[in-house]
Length: 560
Image (cartoon, rainbow, N blue to C red; front, top):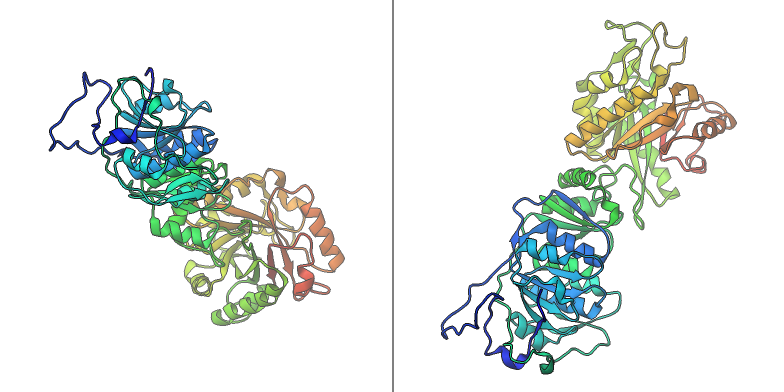
């Protein structure tokens, strides 16, 4: 390892040339000799998503590893040295080089070897043991002033900029090449020159080689909170933009979705544990890149971002062309869309959340007869349903397709509507009341379904959503008694592509409905909740204010 680190002396810089540690003797080039500039080399195929977490030193190391294949020049500072980190950040952006922090168990030596580093700008008190023997070190003090730093990096820099405590990440994020501001800790005095006494006796001072800035294409950084300053400096040095994603889900807000759609990154580096795991983030980014949004904005059915409104839904229930099955079918398509909006409107004054109008369309209808396939379920065709599905989407309304499968299984029936479920604004509802066991007939028995069939349907829908990079989908389970879904506690709620919701379908007197609501919520899996208002069967039917007085406030209110 190196016995010492060469300290830059501004007075000597004008007469110094740069070299490597294995030079036998200082070279004396002719006046016309110009060293070839060096530049970092990005990874040819970085991982589609990298989640960076941990302390500042670990984040700096992970950023370098995620983006770079080689870096002839690196910038080093000691972890915990705030003035030194600011100096290192300025230098890194000016040089187009990565910034690394030593200490805090960061294996900087291995990263320098991997990068093939030949020169290191060492800021402040850095342990020389981290430097391989063949790395030429150039030292500057923590808090170096513009003259020192400019002479060292071989180019002009911007104005000195004081940085208040706690503002380091923001200040680094604002740095811009090729002449970044010189960041200095607020209240500190910038060091105007190095200390000549610190220079080893007769060793000639060494300056950095000229560098060429490289912009790493196809990369976008995501941040749930501040990016650690050294890692942020490397991003700025490589021309990588940072997108703020509060909560760690890029699908959550319209702003994030549209920013990703515009940037269309091939690789993301995400700062914050909320983004983990990386494989999930890959799918979230793929969906956001499409730019397709749900009614109400963003790609989450029920976003939960601090400081942002959530979503609630108010829907008409039924099937087109049949008023006997619900209010949805009592009018034509344009009037249905208008009526859905009329039902949603009174709820907007009752909540700060976004209220989205919706329609829940019975796609397969429980029938008294066996039907030609013996299913006791009449299928509406995709083309029959498409006019309302498309009109609702054009009006900014959500659509749920409801299945009443009789003797067929829910997966088989859901697959019949793949073309509609492939639309961004269409979700799925399962109605176990109409799922018959062998020998059962509608209206003689109340149907039920086993949890394995429910979970298989959820898995299929999640896979469709993931493979087609669609926004999240509402996944509704209708229920008014516990026995309708056996082993409900095993409901798989892990699919990131789905927003599961139990829709409580109790009808009649309000005390009875409240009892059903409480019974179904007891020991329930973690889901959202829906409430149904029946025009004819409820005694009395709740008005909007009374409906939103139900606790917890329903996420979906349906009218039948």
